[in-house]
Length: 327
Image (tube, rainbow, N blue to C red; front, side, top):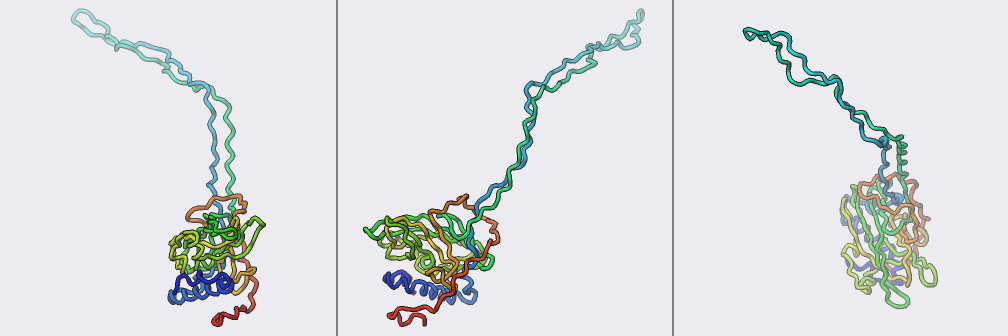
């Protein structure tokens, strides 16, 4: 397979063939991986979710009273000398009293009284248990998004971030961004990162422009960026594996606002003007109450809703020059 086949077409033809080629390459990956791999290894049908990192609540803390004076020492009292021993010692002429043992003792030993104390301070009120905070569908750049494991057999952690622009001329720039994939489940995942992730919106000097600006090897070359080999072909992510990849695309001059990810490229439907379904978006204008990633060993909650169902697609119409499309 020519690794650049998806990215080297003229831009006018990419609009027609992009999703078709993604589908063909994913099916080819399923066949190449053998009987253990099926279409379920490429389809994510669960709602994507961001789960905020929460802290452990502090326990109730009872404060002791504050001591304001030191303990008071009471000296011993009632000292008594030891009494003589009864009887006498006969020395042959005189019977003398036995000499008592030296010293004596106190009938009341010394002791301490505690010092005065202040009124105890109030007991601290325990912190409330943190309420889980979850985002779905639209996330801030850098958010760790978890999906799969319920309707889909595979389970993933996904991230989009590190968005940068490289001006080329007065009308075009190269937008570069990174995607991170971690397989946190037990089933292998097959994907084409460069064929499923795209720039969806750019804020230009003339206003917002929405569209699909797809990954391009030519864009990387124009910006002097070297792409990893995994970007240019089908990628199999085994359980426990993590990949961080750089993608590049030609976009209009401006600030990239949204990056989209088609999680179910084989869905028989249409989401807007995109073939496929279950789209997730990372955006720079997301104002989230929590922007802290939860880290590893995340307890993924049951999705609050099913993934959006795309509108059923109609029979595709291919351009006249493409005699082999749809065969």
